[in-house]
Image 1: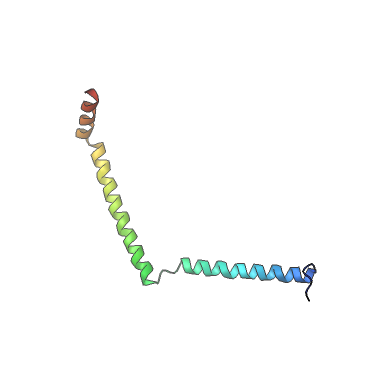
Image 2: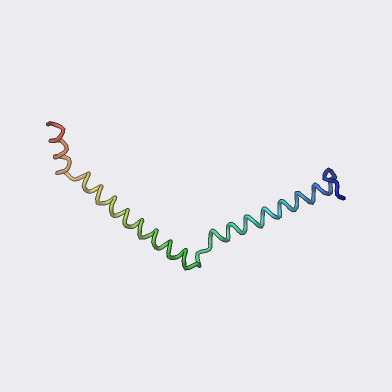
Length: 80
């Protein structure tokens, strides 16, 4: 039977834990950078379309809020 308090057992456990952590970390990185997956490509394309749409909406809202007529209407509303 192995003694958990022996130095050899502790070294083996530390090495096993370190190697396992390295393998798990590499697996996680490989899954995160997997861009060849067609589903992931489709999701990326959808997200890019959404960002483009939102950027255009923000641009329109900026135009509306910085419009001189809108500012004039706002000033008139405050005077009432």
